[in-house]
Amino acid sequence: VFMKTVGQGLISGTLFSYVFVFSAAGSFASALGMGSFYYLFVYKKSNPVMGFVGLSLIGALCNNMAQLVVAQYMIFGAGTLYIAPLLLCTGTVTGLLLGLFAEKFTKVSRWYSSLEDVL
Image (cartoon, rainbow, N blue to C red; front, side, top):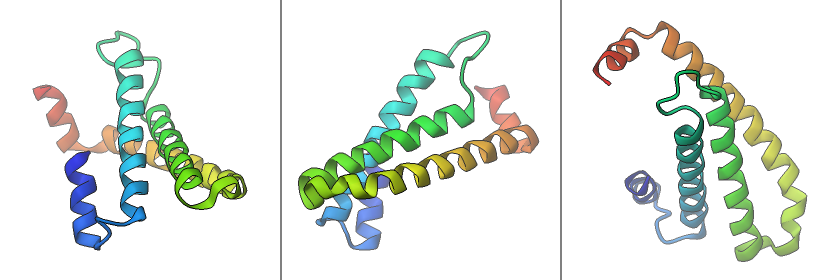
């Protein structure tokens, strides 16, 4: 996550800007949320409680919440409440779509099924 965030900041030219802070906060929160839920509900479970859709929605929610906290304290203050519903709705829709794509991809991908044999 660190390399992705720094690399993205370098390539886009936003490494020392508030955009980088938004990206870093969202990426780290998303990774922490998805990793925690994966470990608690999926990892080494004979009957996993959560799939790609659930994990993707958790990641989107954590990302959006972290970015809203950063927005409130760095830029917008109380005005963050006005953008929160739109951001959370957009994050939920994109998280759902990404999760559905991941579910479909893992079912049809020969490359992914070859990784399952290795792991």
